[in-house]
Length: 221
Image (cartoon, rainbow, N blue to C red; front, side, top):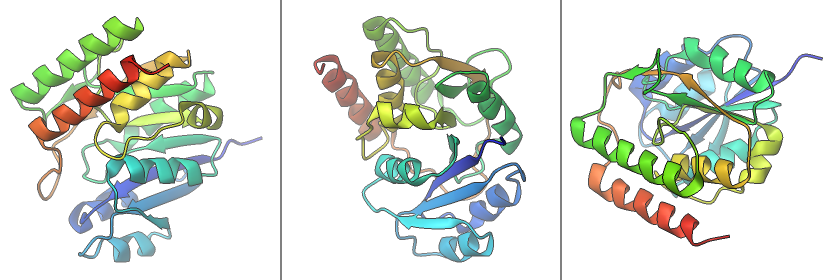
């Protein structure tokens, strides 16, 4: 039986980028879910032209992803960004990782074959520091942490029981995958610069958010 594959994309005012992303989604994808934060531009018009399933969530990136992941009908569910930073040709790696028996497959910019064209030195240092902490506390061997190109099987989504509303969502996924002893695979991914507009990540504010998530999970059973 052919496995159904869903892609979840959170959006907020991404009219210039979204058409490029959706136009390059391969035909093997059964369902595309756009979770929009009440965009004020033409993001939704574009999403409708591509016959995506549209949901709404205005509480943040993490909250939007959780809503989309829980609504997805696919046997394999992939999360990706709407800013053209993720290469759609890498979807195959994320899909095959789950087909091979892994619970979650995580794109990494810091293993052989990966890379980034959009990561200032301060953000790179912060990511490495958070990777160090998570690996230390949960005895993992992650190479990347704050990166949103990932895939899951349906049971993994249920087991993770995610709750982060903002940019700590990727960190929470990595920590809870370790806590729940899920089978994790990292695959190489190259992060491109966003094609249009300015990114919504704020280094210090979201760095504090990620730090709090790590501390909270450390003291939570």
